[in-house]
Image 1 (cartoon, rainbow over the protein chains, first blue to last red):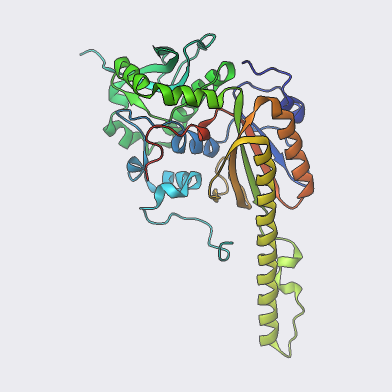
Image 2: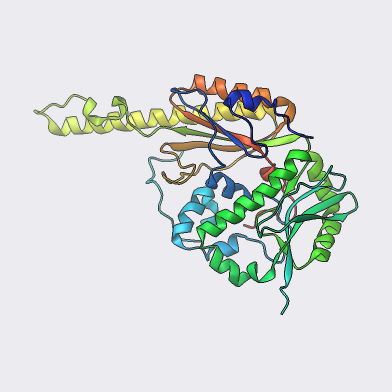
Length: 102
Length: 263
């Protein structure tokens, strides 16, 4: 089905919905609804296209096995996407732990 | 020597899908349908040399290229999702040729048809909750009166006050995260809660605060008003937290078939 221009998200953000482009609704105590981001945030996108989605044996599928090849700079970004991709690698730079987990 | 091509799969859609969007893929190639029975793979031809393992080795380290590939891949998936149910494939699922794609469809047709039924007329919404970094005076150790006569006691009191403030914030944020999750779960037909990550500040989408909820929900298109209302209401109820709702996404997080995520 076609997603209509009258979709609720449009009134929420007060800007035209660019079809297929996820809109971001930011809520803080200062502004209940912030304008949508210009484009989809890369971390949100990589989280989905690299770590989720169907995996059906292609000849080349980007999987955890390949991630070892990634340099540290990119690893910082990808570990922000999915830390569990790096369980076999050394810890990447992250915020220091603040206390024991709940 | 002629360029050898490989078949990059973006998504699976019903073969009866109205029409394939006029759009190009990761290699600026036009996309086409490879059909088997009732299902079809949205496929593009890419230069095989660009997607072999050696090329991946190079390109995985090239953030600009990875971003281009991710955005191109998503653009095709999203365009399919606008007009028909779409089962997104993971980035870089590439077959030797269209025949191999058709073989995959034949092997997996029941699972893929089931996945199409699951995602039809539904969309994925991402919900993240962040709590702000310490900044108010409750977190400031100097807020505890300093007694110059008993510096050691003052220090311990400051430490204790600091710890309990952190603990209270952490616990109330965790409770709020559970509440947000429960409310979106009520709207959803499926939910996927993943461990919070701490995205480095400065990265696109990076947040200054600490993530306490990282979840995705598969929600019927008829409940979009409810999604917006829930986001607004929860934002008002928890003014100290930042609630980030993204969507509608193609259902990347709700198509667990095939090999799944390798451990």
